[in-house]
Image 1: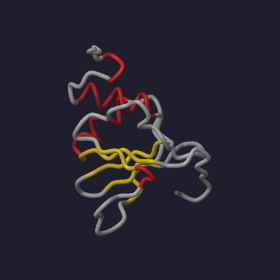
Image 2: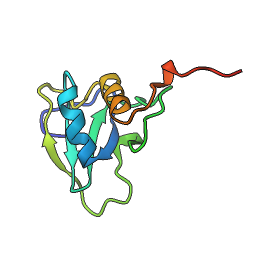
Image 3: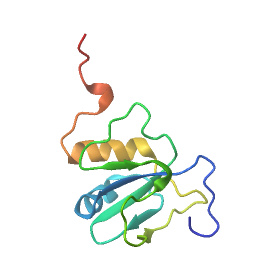
Image 4: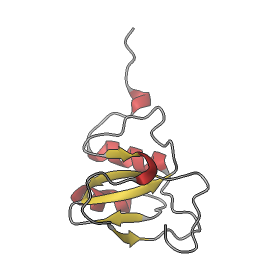
Length: 112
């Protein structure tokens, strides 16, 4: 985490391809810390932001904000304006659903 920030709710991350991250950014009312490399952006969200949600492909949810298989650490490309690193997960989820043409989990029909 950047200096001066705390993560009282723990940290997970949502990884998206860089091209998609660029499309998501202007759709969010508030943005926390974002890390990136040449191919992916990682949005820091509170722990358990995957509870009862199926993040739409090609997004990947990373528990503990651990980047699997990374050769080097991604760079911080956006710092939160506050003292916590979080992007609110529901607006991020909805923006990703819209951009990937995915119906949000709670709007899907339930089959018995």
